[in-house]
Amino acid sequence: EADIYQTPRYLVIGTGKKITLECSQTMGHDKMYWYQQDPGMELHLIHYSYGVNSTEKGDLSSESTVSRIRTEHFPLTLESARPSHTSQYLCASSELDRPNTEAFFGQGTRLTVV
Amino acid sequence: DAKTTQPTSMDCAEGRAANLPCNHSTISGNEYVYWYRQIHSQGPQYIIHGLKNNETNEMASLIITEDRKSSTLILPHATLRDTAVYYCIVRIGNTPLVFGKGTRLSVIA
Image (cartoon, rainbow over all chains, first blue to last red; front, side, top):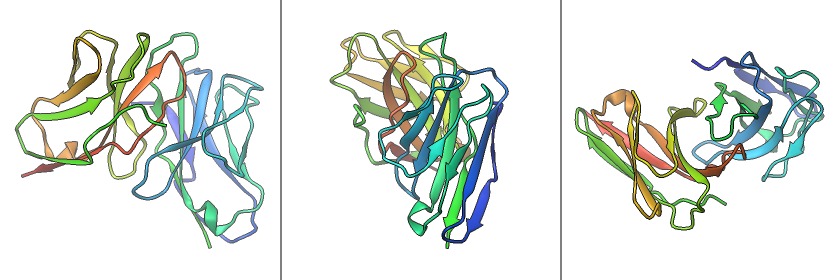
């Protein structure tokens, strides 16, 4: 079992609210990722990090922002939620100093903006 | 863009082997082939990966052709719990995984 956790699992929130999706891992992994997945569609990379104070944008443009102040923690923030942000958000992590190893995924946060 | 091509869907009888093909004709020499699956929109689960030799673990076997342009994931005895979307991904080093649409495998009783 992978030790990567996302909270909350489900979130329903009103338009205009600020939200933060939490992702934590206890494996000491340097690399962490955020993916966005609409129902029945493929996963799209929106953010990733190689370690503390490192953040990069992914292939899919996103209005969300991320931070990496601690190795184990990679939160994603939406300053003003909109219905178009309704989606599932998946966090993952992998080792940096061992190439060609697997990434581990959390169970996801299903966000609904009303 | 994903560098792999997979069938959209497949069926497999319970207890039989499920053979999921993947085409990756543009794979480069140092890219690995990874397989993940996703059950009911949960987080993707790692299955297996390989470079050029066939690989086997407790979940599955991975057969890579000699020219590395295609591969097959084999679930030796499929169960209902193997019903999922299976993703074949080519990846170099620790670059982020790029997911395509995958194959929706339905295991039928």
